[in-house]
Each structure stands twice: as C-alpha cells, then as structure tokens.
Length: 205
Ligand SMILES: [Zn+2]
Image (cartoon, rainbow, N blue to C red; front, side, top):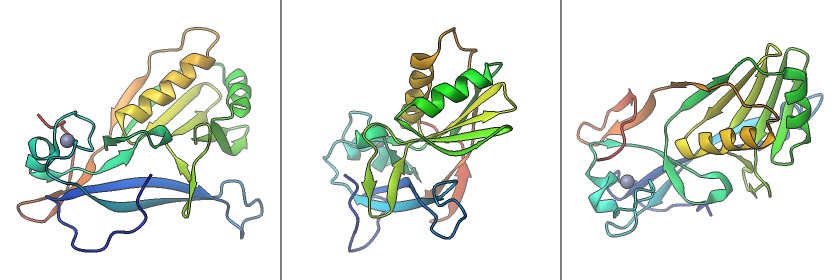
C-alpha cells in the first residue's frame, strides 16, 4: 500500500517520488458524484540501494534509477500491484460505435462514470475492487467518449495504458481500430542542478 507519511529529508538518491490520483465526491456540487473531485498526491518512498528498483526493471535501485541524472516520478500500477515509471500518454481509437460503447462502459464494474451527456462521457478506471484510502478512491486511468465516435484513453504509465486497452479489447464485439498514441513531457528534477525540467521520459538503461 502507499505509505501515508514520511519523516525526514527527501533525497532524490534515496527514494522515489510517487504520484497517485484520487477521486472523491464533491459535497458542494449539485450532484456530488458527478464529476466529483480529482486530486493528485505526491508521496516520497524511501528506497534502500540494494532493494528492487520501484520502476519495475528487476534491477536493484543502485543499478537502475538511482544512477539516472533525472529524478523520474513513478506511479502505482492498477490494484497497487507494484509501480511503474511515469510516462504520460494518451490513445485515440476511432471510429467506434459510441452508443454501443457507452452502454458497455456504463455496465462495467471496474469503471466509474463521472460525466454522461450526449456529447461526452467520462469514466475513471478504479479496478475491481476499487481501492480507497484517506484521500479518496484511487484512479488508474481515464476513458473518454468523444463526438459519438472516438474513445480517448489517458494513462500515467505503460502498465496503466495496457490495462485500459486490455479492458476495451475484452469488451469489444468487433476488432478495435488501432490506437493512435501520443506522449506528453513529464516534470523531473535534475539531480545535479536541482532544477525542474520537463522532458520526454526515456527508460533507464
Ligand atoms: Zn529503476
């Protein structure tokens, strides 16, 4: 589970910055459940040099991410099954039958619908069971239905994106169009200069 508190110094060479996204109802809104509130939390996860690297490479931390010049954030995998490097990405699948997909997505227990109108539907991937902590319910990716003919997926890691694509393939009754992928820059800290830089992530080698 995500540790909730850390006491002591935050050293880029002694641990990871872990970003998680949480949803909770918005008591002040006309409908507290839609869209609700979404919040990102960054936690520091201290890591021993000889521990397995939290990026999931299978190497030790000292032989992997600790050697990297840039401090690359991580995020929990669906179901809190380990962590992955943050690689912000989206996938567009079009054309799809929007009316049929709306029904399928509304029926799926792993998804929480937070917006549903004729132009747009929006679902959070919670998984089954959904996982709650003091910040709310953990979110592991988004699915948007746009213009009645496009599914638009956003995820913070390769593992999360694969989980969303696997879900769509499981629900599909006809082969899906190939996803058109795009990637965003990730904010990292340069361990040498201490400056924040936005860059396209490259995997540790
Ligand atoms: Zn690593």
